[in-house]
Image (cartoon, rainbow, N blue to C red; front, side, top):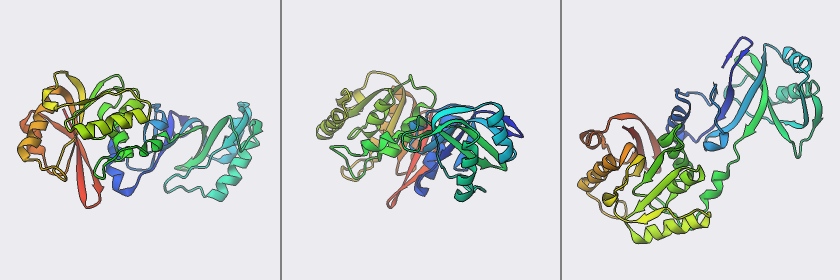
Length: 313
């Protein structure tokens, strides 16, 4: 946050496809505990930008100033020094700072830093921009985008969650509680399970269809992950978990009745304290009747369908 020349925290830059705006905003709310409307924000909370598929950059803001000249003076007076540094350009939504001015400005800032520039193999990345009339400067970290590598699985379904959405759902489910226990009792080919494992979360998956369960196991093995998939009926689960993520079956390929969907919700209530559920139909009455309180939700568009993601306690 910036107030005059008083500085706190980090600048985060986010981006998302329009159809995933609601999902991104819900993820940011669960990670940062505040509503995010713009594609950049300040927070005192430090989160690795690679944790989210939507965070593009994080700047650990070190100095702010009312003018470029004042910022240059601060860098010089504080003898800021880096070897092999590089300024990284990033776009701020509705920014008053154009690219040409940015290039000129970071050239001036670079000459105010003791050290050397390395544009090819920098040891440190720096960020500088102008926000609400104030210049800011700090060390920058990019999203490594390793999650994109997990788009290429041996097995997938056209109707299954995409990797980006699955990663966001895991963040929505666990929030700050990375040490929690997580269950995906209708895990399909394991997309959510894989994203949870990549974040070192204690997760298990259940899949009733033996063929699909085998495909999920193959996907985990492909990425070198230990098999945590059980080919079994979720209604037979005896363990209790902190949170469940359920992409409720909706009968696109295999017929399913409303009664069976309600049974899934009932079992989710029994095996988990918290539920993040993805539905194609309004299931609010069923959720409430099983004792859940719906505390937040968002909508995601996929093709001709609208999916509702609800957080329930």
